[in-house]
Length: 149
View 1 (cartoon, one colour):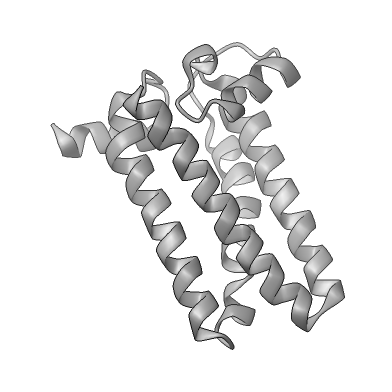
View 2: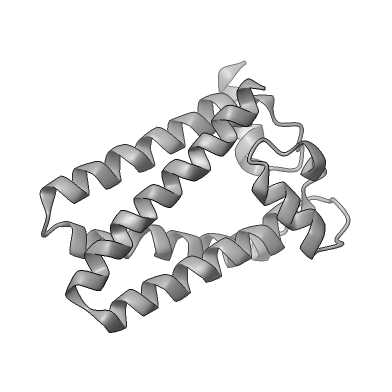
């Protein structure tokens, strides 16, 4: 139950931060706002299709919605992740998380809120979700479990 609370909570915090980033971008530029939306959708889709789809824990996913979407939208067998899959997921996802920073620098309050939300989500995932996750193929989980143990 604790990992589900942290998993869902972390996703909600990331979504709130992304909304703040999108707000900052759209205020300055409609074109870049749509680029941000496209990058966010690409990153989210890549995470589901390239990462969550290979996870053996879709039915008990702490993030709930990601596991559910992966189980409904894909039918891939769980296995170890390839470097190409990890990069194809990490690049658009990183872009979506980093892109708002250019516009957020212009508003320190929004930048601080964005940073606090993202940092809190990261801590929730790394300290609360990853150690309880059963996906032994995940390179992040394996690194965290090794550090925690």
